[in-house]
Image 1 (cartoon, rainbow, N blue to C red):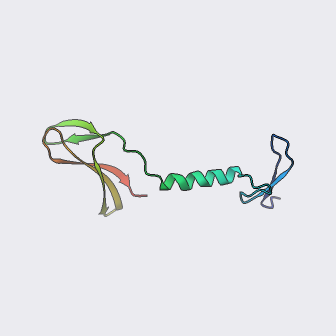
Image 2: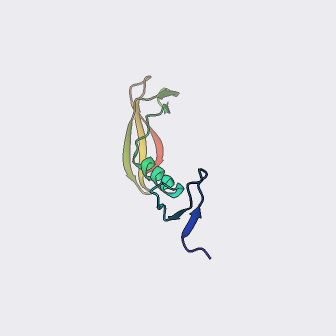
Image 3: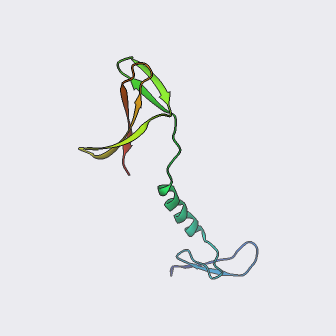
Length: 102
């Protein structure tokens, strides 16, 4: 039967550490703390702008660019994210669906 407390023996041989809910007696960070910290940090960090591919219907050509804006729009399926860029061929605004807002 598991009581929520696991015993971990470190490789360095510093003794036995009792870990409950990600906390140790010696103050070391457990794997559970690291995993939850990565999840939190990942949701707060803004990703670097990627090079996205757009398609200009009027010019019938596709192009790639890093110069675009991210716009959120309300749809019948909920909030969606779109990337909007200016076409180098015709100068019109070109939209690309990025996905549902998380």
